[in-house]
Image 1: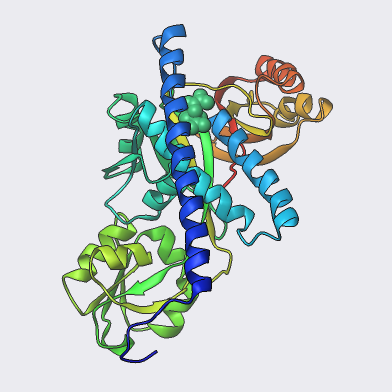
Image 2: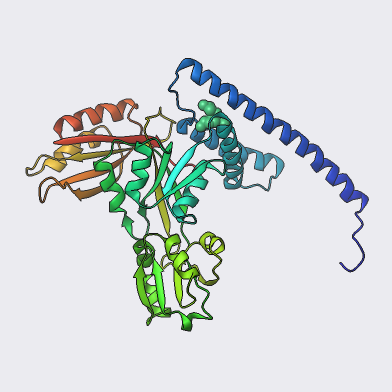
Length: 373
Ligand SMILES: O=C(O)C(=O)C[C@]1(C(=O)O)C=C[C@@H](O)C=C1
């Protein structure tokens, strides 16, 4: 390196020619793939005017196959692209294909820069339009009113547990879960203060505050801790006052022009949030699925055990059970249960029929592909 312009060696020129040739092929193949997707859109409309352009089960199958084939290719070619990275690239190509069929609008808990928006992009790719709304019930509302095709809501966090607000929304909504996506969450302390000692107030969403409690006690014991409706909202407040810090994502920091004073401030490494994709339709099995149901047991001794017995007898695995107050009668509960399998799988459907017959209340919240990304 120096003042002289770089001259490229013959070897470099030859290698670049190879890259140019591959790029030509990749471009042609992407264009051809998207044209096929447009034909698929026409075929869907021809067979059913209400057909869904977005097909989560098919997307999961395509991405799983990319993962499997890439593992083989890595061996064969001593390839350097990891399976995760290849799935991510393919996610974007499929996102563009879907947009050519029908531009999708996906609602999320805003404002811009929230982790939920990052989950939207991770699950649907960059080609979707994301629509920010103010609260989790608003996400449900705009999807119900068909102002957005789908919505993305947080449902549980590996450190803090269940997001009760989201579960409660399912009680009063008929929307279906049609997908899930997990996002590793790394929190940053964002502030334009000149060092930690000048931070007087910290704003964050209650979930983020809980996930960074020990860090805050240790490094900012004297700061006033205040809640905001979202992490991005906190970032907006911090962007206006250098005595204020926000706990939010690095994306929010860039978006609202705030410095990162400390990064990775979450108390638990591997802090991960699971999000659900909600929509108006149900979809076929992808081969690796989960089912979420909401049930309540009759109010008598041993009834929960009786209720779950059909699942146990049929060998259906339960991956989660949460109880929430029924909101109808005091001390009565509804249970949110995640099962492994799709409601169309024979064993699952038979077990659910039996369970339904024994329950005081039963609602299928959705069967959906296990997250691939
Ligand atoms: O297979 C389909 O049904 C398609 O519409 C094609 C395609 C794809 O690009 O592979 C696009 C959108 C769907 O969500 C699923 C898959």
